[in-house]
Amino acid sequence: MAKIFKTHKRAAVAAIFAAALLTATHALAEMSAEELAKLAQNPVGNLISVPFQNNTNFNYGPENGTQNVLNIQPVIPISVGSEWNIITRTILPVISMPALYPGDDTTNGIGDTAITAFLSPANPGKLIWGAGPVVQIPTNSDRQLGNGNWGLGPSVVVLHLEKGDPWVYGVLANNIWSVSSDNQGGSYNNGLIQPFVNYNFSSFYLTSAPIANVNWNAESGQQWTVPLGGGVGKIFHFGKLPVNMQLSAYYNVITPDDGPDWQIRAQVQFMFPK
Image (cartoon, rainbow, N blue to C red; front, side, top):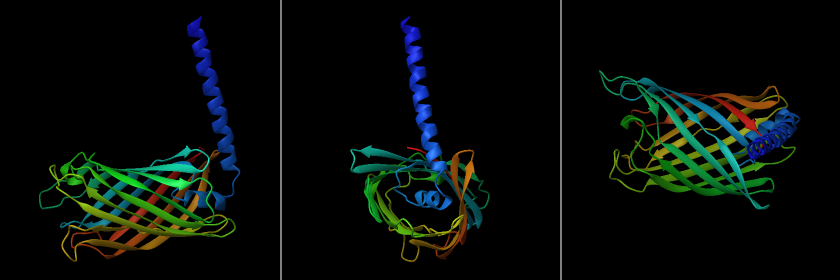
């Protein structure tokens, strides 16, 4: 009897959860494409989403090969009372590394995982911000795909998003220092700056979100990768589920000697209710 009661209780909880999920999904589906696009463009938006961002880098390494990095980037918001949210952003890269010297083979696997936890106001105005720690975890499956040491640093994002204004723009930045230097790859000190600007039309949007990277430990002239470019994005629906898709291209105006020249970025972002 107790077993039957537990089974019915689980079924009732599952039914309540499914009903809540369906209601929230309907609410998202009823938003306009422009509203959904602006929600997707907010890095600290109060929305569960799972972006798959694929970056193809051309003329990478001493052999001028093609590197491919698929970033799996789940975003999960956590409410802290009525005033604050913690927005967790995880980046797990799946990498295809080309040959780096004659006779070398392509190396496939996963790289190091980065997890950021932004503390952000739950009810911001048109100026939105988030700040918190970023942790680098040595999950790389091969020595060519990452570093064996843990890392830690600060991360911050600031953006402008206003109802009725088609522009969404801001900047995200972080810097990660290794907390040890004993393992494979040694110590590191790496920074990232990503300015972004989007202009939203009723059915699509224009976007530019170049990711500049800096290796502070590298020699002078070999530290920075600075891209310029942009692309286009659009909200689609798979049934009631909104999906944000975009395609863009970037040219590296500054790059280390063995850095890539061009990058093609394609992204598919599944948007779920919180």
